[in-house]
Length: 538
Image 1 (cartoon, one colour):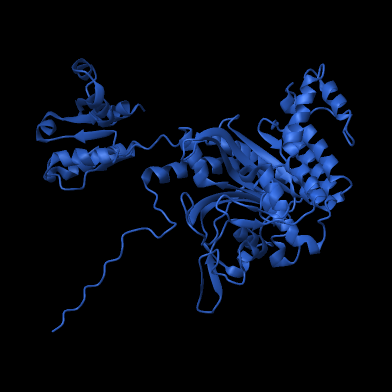
Image 2 (tube, rainbow, N blue to C red):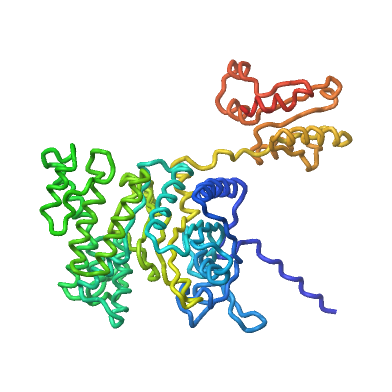
């Protein structure tokens, strides 16, 4: 009689593009998100949790290919043959909520959301198919005050988690400005939509490809180091020249600021900067300089908006975009947010096509070492902007909205790189078990510690080998082991073993230091909680 084949065992491994998160990582993420939520709450935003599953129809144009709903998302058909998918981001669910509950929600509606999203895309080093996002959005306000508020809130969120001023900058631009530049370059109209898409994607790659790479993509195309060729927008030299004025705007602004700094009295009053701006067409002579700090940094936003006015020419939409940037800068300045924290920067484009107005990006400016040991800036950790047409897909009516999304994993990596991650990674105090029959005594000890707010646990493994209990405590990164055998119980005492100090002493201490800093103390049983608190430094 043939033997049945054994059932194959499942492989104990995570699917490709996914990963598991353990104690310290989860704790660090929760601590960071709690701090960010504190800022959002202070700004009047309410939390929102949406379903992890949305209809593909609701996700809409967020998909790379709507005709193939399994491309880009994890999708399936339900019993009614409707396509469902794990949410691709947190913005599409918000648009659906704003439309579904529009009669119940206040308008404007401020909400924040935090949670995992899923993308069925090619996985790679540091690129996962499931990751956390942290979003904040205002739906129902067309005022640029809503955009200014998002930028201020983003600045506060970065600082509260441990990114100090000087290590970050929130950059603000306006999609309308770029639309105005495209109009000047002859790229307006429905028949130029394909070219505009290529232009957007090309400009968004400026940090990676540089001026020459973007110029190539605006023209015939570009061949990368591997030999792969990317077809360009096919623009003329004159069109490329107009667009490159926008692409290289930051360099022009920096040069003008250098010239301002050389003018007599430029840094002592508004006279110098006004005199300089007066030499350019369309300058706002006589306006007060935003901010009170007497430095070139104060003038940046003034010079930036003046330069953008020049390159949008007579384009109405371009001028509207510049005016919105001026308003945002003024609103932020009134709250104390100057260019040292939030700055107008034409290099911010945001590649997604649904942005309709102001766009912003938070960049960390400190340097880290890449995988080849080279220094580089850490880069972007958050981005967003105004998307006034998103809810319209559901209601047929335009509903203005603006918001930002923080890349949780990137921000956590940044904090770790600067040594500013969650410091509370210690494990629980471990109450060891010397006598099985006295488990009630040990549970009483751990109960007292927990009631005092101290994280603690009783060892629940086989207590036969005491050494294994201490190995367990080490693996748990426990700060203290509580020990009470029969002799200690008769004397009414407990032994507290400082595992952290003990490890340090074992590594490098001399015999004299060992005696001066005992890693183990005996205390009365009634003083257990007080002694543990003292040893923990509470």
